[in-house]
Image (cartoon, rainbow, N blue to C red; front, side):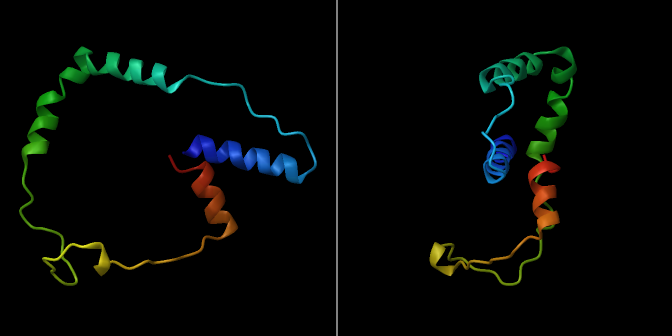
Amino acid sequence: WRILLEDFAAVYTQLKQGNKPVLPQKTHSFAEYAERLKEFANTKAFLKETDYWRQLEENTIQTPLPKDRQSSDQRMKHTRTVQFSLTVDETEKLTTKVH
C-alpha cells in the first residue's frame, strides 16, 4: 500500500503543479518477491529458526490483556466507529516513513 500511496501522491502533486504525471520506473514484481521469499524459507539460516517459531506458536497466553468489559456477544452491532484526523506532518510520516 505504501508504494501505491506514494505513486498516487506523486501523480497528484505533479498534476496540481500543472505538470504531466510521470511515475518512477517499475521495480521488482510481487511474483519475484514471493519467489525469493520462498527460496529464503528453504535456506539453512531460516530453517535453524523453525523450532523457535514453532515453540512460540504453541505458547499459550497466561495472563490475557485487560478489557474494559467482557462480552460473550461478538456481533457487529456492538461495535462503534472512531474518527480522527492527522496533521500534514503526521500524514507525511505515515505515507513515507512507516513500513
